Image 1 (cartoon, rainbow, N blue to C red):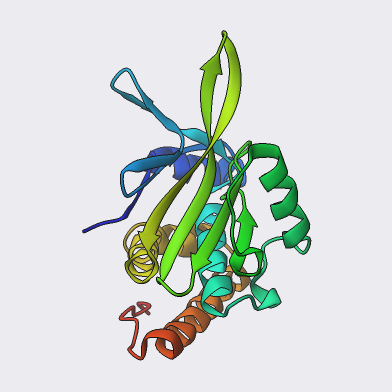
Image 2 (image 1 turned 90 degrees about the vertical axis):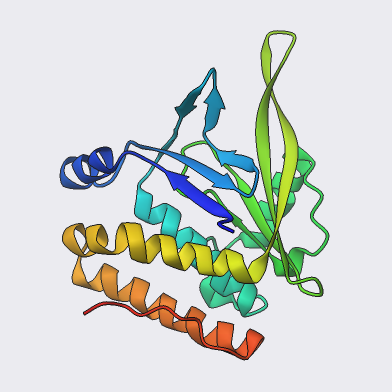
Length: 206
């Protein structure tokens, strides 16, 4: 079962990478049975404007590494992680139970905010996000979350990167940037083996 789907226009991504440093790509992220970025309305997908598809993938990988390592600060996306989590909890009433095993990110979205929390005992990832609703003709936000098994979630993100983004990454980003991703992936493979006692089958093509 595929838990994660990332919908985007490949042509838009390529043009954005060539002419706008990746800015302006519209993205929909679908996790399990919930849309956590973008929307589906009147039979049409409407993507959230992002700062770049690789910021999205990088933040997903950093979040995985942070949670697998049980909070190693070198994998933080923002140095003031706890302060951002507490502010976001207060602002949107997110029900985060373990701040020490939670990481704040925006997944490259212009106006998005997420907290990824790991229930270590259940090996369950809890993605906290805000859902836009209309109350009395005014926009408001409702706290929501989606829960998925952590292990297959990791595999899905790796497969998405390998199948959809790796070649474009090599085409448009610097050697240093590409190597940064590979180093992070190798860290995740090591941490995955430490946690689950098995190899994460993911080979980087030459």
